[in-house]
Image (cartoon, rainbow, N blue to C red; front, side):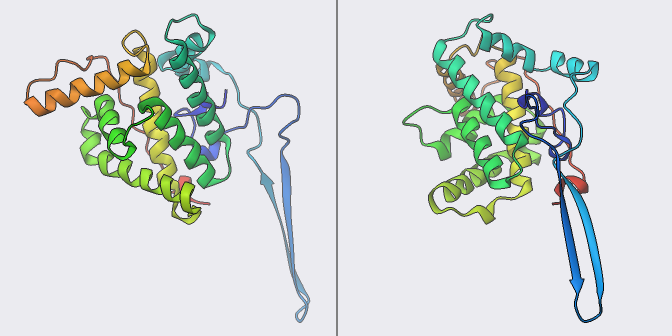
Length: 243
């Protein structure tokens, strides 16, 4: 359920789904006093977003148009894909859901990056090269790929992922990194799940990317990409970047 908020809500508006009262909303209070002047300041703030994730008609219509309901059919076994790919999709979905509701920026970023790797890579890949190449197969056709510098950004966030995992460099991770990986994952899910007959195994995802690379190398007109691929770009406000 947390995954369903990817693309549907900005991170500052996301609600944490829960059963009963396992994630209760609470408040944080501050009291600061100046002993010399005798003045004081008291402040209260809400921890976590007030309210609940509403499965309204707006939420339902959004999910119908995109990938969430189709993903559920895959995970239930109603839509046939390979068992291994079904497991990878499920694990990626859970990781992205955990990322969406995490209040820890580096942790949210790491969950996103692992999910990207689950969707696009296999054991033995050189991830620094495989990730931008395979992502390009799905969204390189849009002008945003060049304008937003997707290839360079993917290489950059992968380096930050390695620095976080191997050296514990949390301070490198920015909100922009998390938003970028949110956007990347949203469009990967949108196109992979939306074309489940074409991408029914991870091998089919990788083979698709190789065919796109071959077209680029030979300089021939694109024939491999389905015309039904989509790209949805989210814009963020100044409020989204505030702590």
